[in-house]
Image 1 (cartoon, rainbow, N blue to C red):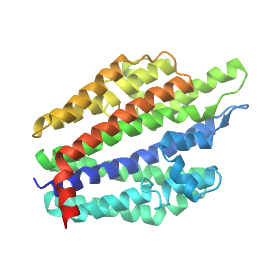
Image 2 (image 1 turned 180 degrees about the horizontal axis):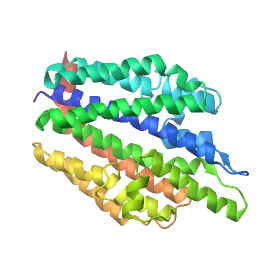
Image 3 (image 1 turned 90 degrees about the horizontal axis):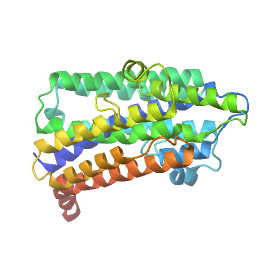
Image 4 (image 1 turned 180 degrees about the vertical axis):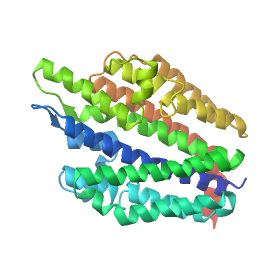
Length: 317
């Protein structure tokens, strides 16, 4: 397969996954805001750090407030990770290799782009409209993935799609989990405990994981149990462990996979070795930062191994 096609497939998949998970990230934040008890507050500056976008945001905005951050995450194409920018990039990437994909995929992605273009501004007007519009983005993006899984041969092209999807998903799962670190809990111990339970329930709901958590872990919701499930459960498709397993499966099908596979295996071992009993913001944030750094290193290794030829030819042109 041409490295140019492999790279575009990989990034198309990442952009679509990023759009969906940014929508989940925002919906999780919205749910947290609705459930905040008296005496609790939300740190918008912390939210930007969790998203990894604080430096870029402050290049274009003076203050970290809800309205501007929602616009930055949803609409602002100066942010390449915004929902509008991600879906636009996915659509443009798809145009270059439409012959590789089932014919209906272009129609679905174009439909997702048109829906987002026409409704994104409405999402910034109120929390209820935001939730409605972003739920529409999630549903339409899931229909694209369902069509890909059900109507595309699981050949090398599909492996690059799956590789990009799972790498992006693992990274964004850690960021959705980390939204809780932006909440300043009330001083009252009983109110703080109730707030923690609601926050972890919101995290599970944001990842469509609540029912599976109750089925496989139990009805009691506490930080260490939720973290262990969302980071280490090998069966639920949005956990970091499951995504790493899918990445290893993809790499084993490709050629010259040794270096990326070593990094994926090292990330898995680090994940298993983490102590998740302390879920207070600082140590949890450090744990999740380390996973994100490992996933970034894995992306770099994949890029060097499979996309470098295309990048070198572009530089020489």
